[in-house]
Amino acid sequence: MLDIGDPLGAMLSLLMGAKMHYVFPPAPQVVVPVVGESAGFPVRRVYCVAANYSQHAIEVGGDGREPPAFFAKPADALVPGGGDVAYPSRTANLQHEVELVVAIGKRGSDIPADKALAHVFGYAVGIDLTRRDLQALAKEKGKPWEMSKASDQSAPISAVVPAAQCGHPVAGRIWLSVNGAVKQDGDLGQMTWNVAEVIANLSTYVALAEGDLIFTGTPAGVSTIVPGDVIECGIEALGKLSVKIV
Image (spheres, helix red, strand yellow):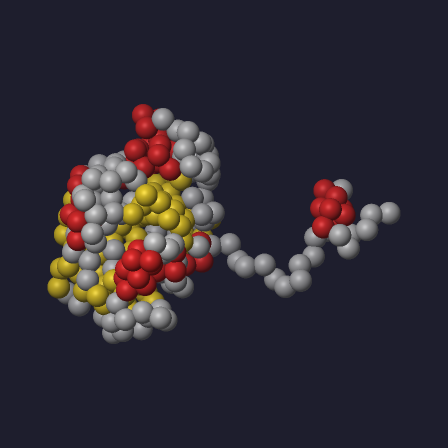
């Protein structure tokens, strides 16, 4: 008889068909709506590319042409469909970053750039909300700056548009306004590393899989936002996303 009081015993019991019970209910699966589909996109991981537009890299202290650098957000930081977003704790300088989001629909690792787009399910509009003061402090101290990026509700996202509907955008307006004033206004063609290159590079670090999302960086013009601000943003061919900071 198996002793399921130890981890190995519990795993063996599970493999032999015993029903697993939890000490508390597991978190629900994070799902992003899909345009034109009744089924949603189940999220596995959320990756982000830092400073992938040269002018934004310069405005945050980079040199404008750096190799891709990646960080992650928890899946439950997503806010599908936008709406109200709570102002996070421990910051006096929350900033917006509008981004093209890539939804992965086919797994792979060490993916060649010329094969990378075959791994894309679709695209969405996203906002990377950043506690810029915490990020600056972490950079100054040479410490990880995950806490500047991974706060609760730090990743509003629109519905995913399947690539079968929108193709693979390599150019097109990407913009963001705060209370009606345009703050960011760029073009997807300004990305330092395009979508295929981002996928290829990221897949050398981790195996990508169905359900992964990649936020691909933001154009110049990031600015500070406060409670009460209404953020609207969009990407040509992908639609709009609206958020209110509360």
